[in-house]
Length: 358
Image 1 (cartoon, helix red, strand yellow):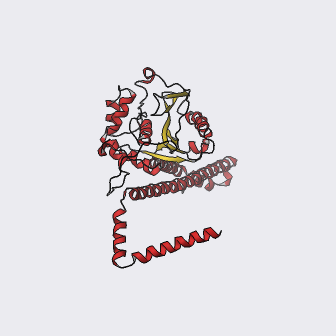
Image 2 (cartoon, helix red, strand yellow; image 1 turned 180 degrees about the horizontal axis):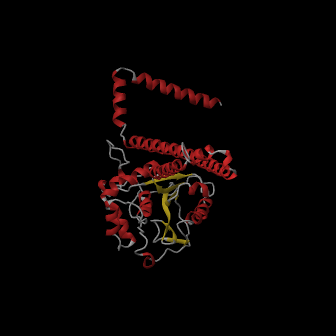
Image 3 (spheres, rainbow, N blue to C red; image 1 turned 90 degrees about the vertical axis):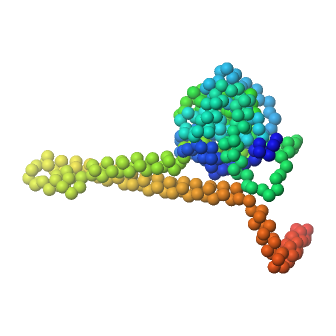
């Protein structure tokens, strides 16, 4: 494999994958890490476009039969993985390219349209040959002064990790694994209940790895900032409508209470009703104000999280080796390097001595 065809290994992190999705031209989508599969946690993230599951790969006897290509062609975008280190990006693409409701951007739309009639292996090759996708994927490889050798093939005993996708397509829940010959149908589902149906599937896979804890599950969801901005706008409209309906100076409540008591019980009853309506509106206004405050706080948290992800990704992409070289050079020029080396060696020797005594 030539250097310009190399795909680097990227870290499994929602901040990395969210920026990767953005780099590929997709708008309004982010990744969110899941720590539980309970219904409340998943419902809070809706709409969920798909799930990405990372697990330690091992050879297994999977009796499940892949859906024949003739049955899913034109309905499901499925690509076999034919390039190394790209399973994370391919798992993400398996979700994005099967969601017609997403704004994919020109590069992914062109890829999807161009490969519509391709078999799975050629779809995988098309992904591997996409300069836009490879460039976005490899943007998380920091510049290196020394070009490393190509990653060696995994040997027995090596830990190998793999990404697969789960999502609903056309009323069917699918598992999309680029190492399999085709999609795995997990049964019928709807957009409302597919998360309920996929939960036991993932739990069974996790339970099959006794003693293994290195799993990672992420949801491909709508950008939380966009969702919260819409929620805030809706709450503000509701607040404005309630304020307009709230009796004020000269309003129905004030007029009713200003009536002469000699007008009789009817006037008194009208005043009471108006006062009750005003109390009800005031209660709703207080509730909306509370929801607005919470939504603004959540939006501020999402902006802070996005900034933190951005800062972390800058550090991931930065080559610190020149800085270290120059720091060591300056310390040597000032005669401070050798004393630091000796002090470090003495400290390490002392730690070993103490460990030996214990």
